[in-house]
Image (spheres, rainbow, N blue to C red):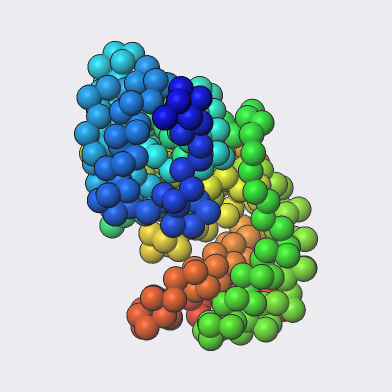
Length: 305
């Protein structure tokens, strides 16, 4: 192969490593190939060394190593989305103890990468103190986001309706038709009460790590979305199973000098119902769980006509 052919090979996108448009294959062969390419990439080598394959994620490939900067134990994530890279880097610059330290990011032949501080401790969603730690960090994430200009998706009324329609198509418990009839009124109310701002977008305990037991909670895998602040709070409440998270979140926002809402009862009902419909739509494997079904029905019934 000529030098120019070798150069083209180094630059060509890695099209065959993708399972979907934003999730990698994570079989042993693909993981080994990507880790080998990463270990030989000059930009990655400037940031992290001693790379060893680690456990893959859901659509991402990971390798462990140490940073060139100061020898900190670190993880290389391969398959990081553009918005994820922008927001993790920006939040790390804007504040402390909300995300793991970010040592570098870039693109390897179309595969985004991030180098993050290695934090192996996981928090316990059954502990109210750990829930409080996640609430605190998520509220601080929203505070830091007010000063950041980076790409986000937008959740609007059309998306709310689409989630409700998708949930109804899967026999969601509760009166979804009633919720759809009231969606426009609910949207007008909750946006007036809560305003619109950037949310982390995927706050649950699977996306939280820590340096030590009980926190601080460090958020990973953001799916940044511009919507009402109560979305992150309701998402965490539904996913953790702890009641009252939205009010805890409001308290943290108030302590940070951020706006909350006057009619918290109605905000709670709307946000919880919408998140419940989303999760009924995207998690059909949970439909046969009687306890989950009862919770979803309760939350969806809380939506207004």
